[in-house]
Amino acid sequence: MNQCYFCGKEAVTKEHVPPKSMFPSHMRQDLIKVPSCKKHNNEKSGNDEYFRYLVMGQSKIVMSQKRFKTLLNNLLRSIKRKPALTVALLNTKKKIRIMDNGNIVENTIKVDEVRLNDSLEAISKGIYYFECNQIFNGITQIYALDVAFTDNNDREILYFENQKEVNRKILNNFKDAQFKGNNPIVFKYRNVIQEKSAFIHLRFYNEIDYVIGLYEA
Image (cartoon, rainbow, N blue to C red; front, side, top):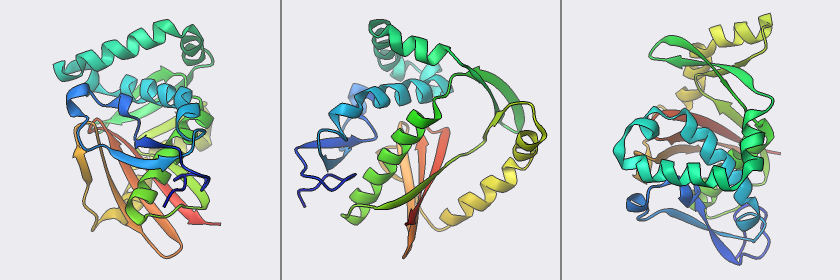
């Protein structure tokens, strides 16, 4: 099928799912690739770079293990070359709460939710195409596990206090699904494909999780 995995237009290139730049050079064997148009490959490179910074910046593994040193240095050089990206990441920060080994940890980080969701939608649709050999047309819902954005109101605090129960219900969809991926320390996924919906669980650097629900429109 010579169609873009995302929009169905003529494919002129291949897209790596997730972006190849998230993998160290010695872990780029047998990466997932899907057919893509120019818009949903080259023209979204800015979002890819933003997503890479955001995810790697949350990863204790990337920050601490020698195997990722070159990857981290490449990212820092990229940020220096593009000051506008640095400004976007540092301005309008949000406070987040993260569940870390059962403890609540607060951190402040800039999150452009539109760009984040666009990146996760592209990755999930790429996985769906790779698994089903067809394009998904419908609605996507992003779930970030163990993270709650807060603005000091009761609704957000209640959401965070119930996060474990929310996570349990979401992950229950995958109780019989096994993780897949040839470079699992960097990226692995598991999926459940149903008649009118699909759920895809993405795990980056063995510690950062997102679940994407794909629903028929």
